[in-house]
Image 1: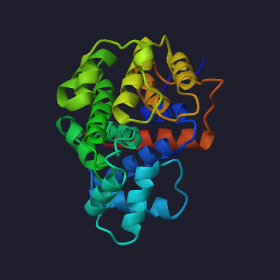
Image 2 (image 1 turned 30 degrees about the vertical axis):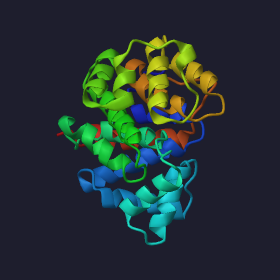
Image 3 (image 1 turned 90 degrees about the vertical axis):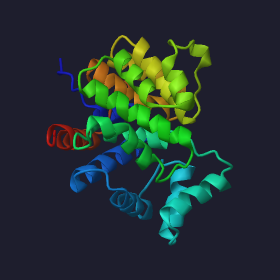
Length: 262
């Protein structure tokens, strides 16, 4: 039997059935490693280069903000303009999906993880629920990398967040009928925690979440990351991952977590 790998980026690659979110997380992690910390300007330049070439599965908010920036609009102005144009509906799961990299980036001290995730989220998504969902995701990943159980990691994420994210993470496991298949970040996070918490092993977590999500590429992306840290990644026959992407996820994680621990 293949030995499990406790790599949230690799787990995310398996849960991500389209591929955009995990590629963005890897891109963010590599940018943080190159800069020796979170450099928002450098991150935006990476995103902009991808936007101009072969970006995919990024969501409407990310692509609209990057298009404005590509046309010379200042980043904060671009994010706020898209927030207004979308009538405040900029709390999609894109920021939480990429925030796994912040949790993995050991160069960012534990005490700064949540705020770093908030800062990075607001580069593209102006809604505070996106920022809080990112803060929670990064905190869960970092806590579990430090050896915390899922329950303890979720409790820590609840402690450092506010609003609906804090409320959802502070409650007991929800009834499955309360879960949402949509892309609203706090509910994506709630569903991801639910399927990771109730699973018996990594393949069960992946299978149950993908079956629940259907064509939506939301909660399984985070389930892959969280379940990788709870159970360890093992191959899932029904949901194979591209070998090149798996290698990229392994190399990125080795660099940003094992390679630069402070």
